Amino acid sequence: MDQRIGSAAAAWAGAASAIAGAGAGELAALLVAPQSSPVAAIGAALIDLAPAWAKDLVISLFGTADKLALLVLIGVALIALGAGAGLLQRARPPWGAALAGLLGAIGILAAATRENPDPLAAVPSLLGGAVGAACVFGFVRLRTREQPRALSRRGFLIVSVSAAALGAAAAVASTVGRAADRSFQAIRQGLRLPAARAAAEVPEGAELGIAGLDPVITPNRDFYRIDTALIVPQVDPAEWELRIHGLVEQEVTLTWEELLALPLEESVTTLACVSNTVGGELVGTAVWLGYPIRHLLARAGVRPGADMVLSRSRGGFTAGTPLEALTDERNAILAVGMNGEPLPPEHGFPVRMVVPGLYGYVSATKWVISLEVTRFDRATAYWTDRGWSARGPIKLQSRIDVPRQPRIRSGTTVVAGVAWQPNVGVESVEVRVDGGPWQQAELASAISDDTWVQWTLPVELPPGDHELSCRARSASGELQTGDTAPPAPDGATGWHTIRVTAA
Image 1 (cartoon, rainbow, N blue to C red):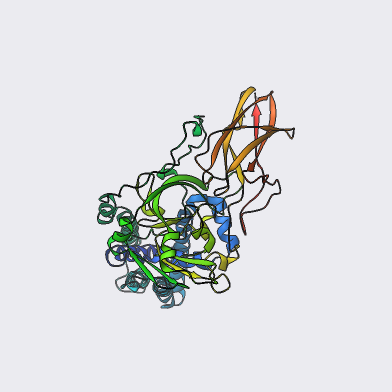
Image 2 (cartoon, rainbow, N blue to C red; image 1 turned 135 degrees about the horizontal axis):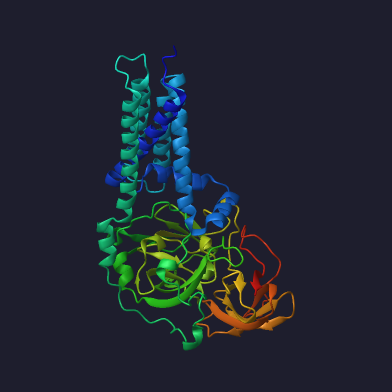
């Protein structure tokens, strides 16, 4: 009689072991190395290694839920590998346990090679791998019938399910614990931002008040988030500092207290992600509080020949910003506030960059800790290393927000949306119905050339199917192109078009 554990039981033993090991590693990360979660470390490594087309595909499929999708995928893969380890342990012991330990080693390598790793970065993955390997070895051995103390099927299920349940509970608890870190939240909530020179007031006619139309100022909770951080860095302002170096006459180091002591200014700026598709929602506008970067660069003294500033985040992300975008008269700032409160953690607390007119991948570095003045022919950044263009000016875009439902009543229908090209401004918007002539829309009052603007136009739609398109003209006279292009490598183009049925 075959004395080995059955295949189904071996696969379950391995899966349960993987869950138990992951839970142990995540709990250890919460206690000793918050930025070195095994799952997040492996996920961050996968993000770094993935080709640009894969990242673009994930963002197009999942939008701002891209990180959740990746974590779910990693979890599924981990359980599948665990099941494989169980089967391997059944067939060729101790290689199944060795495979489980190898997963821990991969986590150690991923965590240790991250930018600014925790001092105990290896501990969570080391513990997770050890627990996983021990469970694979122990569960398969306990259920092997040739062993004198082999567990019954019921006993085996109780032990393995309990281990998996404890592992899952530990993983959930550590995730919730990091998100609800009271000490970090207390630091942020206890901050009082200094008074600042007020931003340009939002004109009375800037908000059209049409149901379904995105507001002019995007609430923090609704502002899009696209970045490479699976775990939001928790940076204590008291320990934050910014280093300005490279092609400068003198290095400048700025602390949090020094930054807050400077004459901060409010400005209203629209930010857009280069991954935004035509008509997409990876764009938003906020009131930012910060200090002009051009003044800090002037203090450092930029040397002749420099044409780029390489910014670096606490998590290791880099962005290459054209020097002129940080030294001209636009409101390129080190931001500490967003819509009247300290930056939310996921939007870069305590300090981030906000640069009007450039896609975020070349300018909007969150958790920023370094500005290196350099040249485009000497340095590259995170996304340019992955095939995206180097300079990234935001392209002229317009979007239809209303009507939002595909079925509407026939007759007069209000069509409304937003248009933007920060640092240039929008002069007009036109709407076309069923391929007919372009009709001029009514434009709301713009806050400034750095922000999007709402627009609206009533149109007559008889019963039947209809196609609505929009296009904008910039303040410089550029007409939005109808040529369609994907987001890569420098931003999507085309006219946003929706289809509705009037009844």
